[in-house]
Length: 163
Image (cartoon, rainbow, N blue to C red; front, side, top):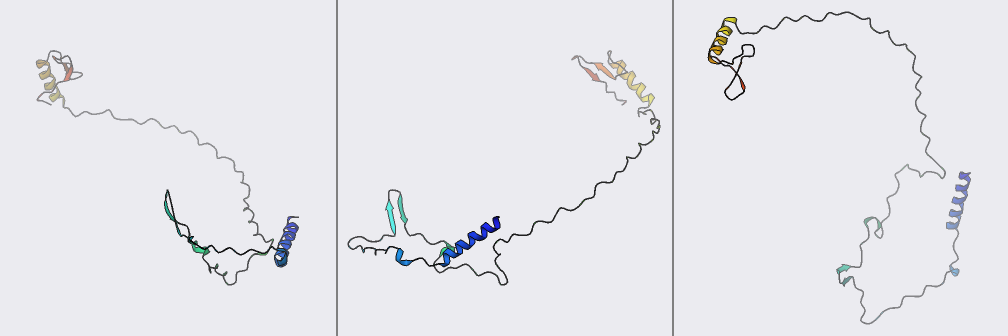
């Protein structure tokens, strides 16, 4: 339906451009009167906002005598009613294959790791001498925490010459 309409519309437009219009039907154009006297055609006009040029230059692609370049050789304009081909159909993806889930892994008993007790590097004889020195020096010394109550009211670490 739209193809026939486009064809008829194109035929009417092309027929209207080919047929000559009657020149006698157009009214004659009166010649422009020549102005003589003190009037001159001015290119620069000045007003309250400044001066400007009244003659604007042509844009680069609209200069007199400029024509668009010819089409490339071997190129034909598309015919009326031509449309590009439709896009190809989407690719076919087969449906996924059903595969049952693998069975869960069997439970395995793993005993917890056994860690050796930590070994601290202070020999007992040196520690004994340090504790004796701190006990003799501070009355509030606690050997389990290695701290004593100072005169300022705070607990401090005992530092002996043996450690």
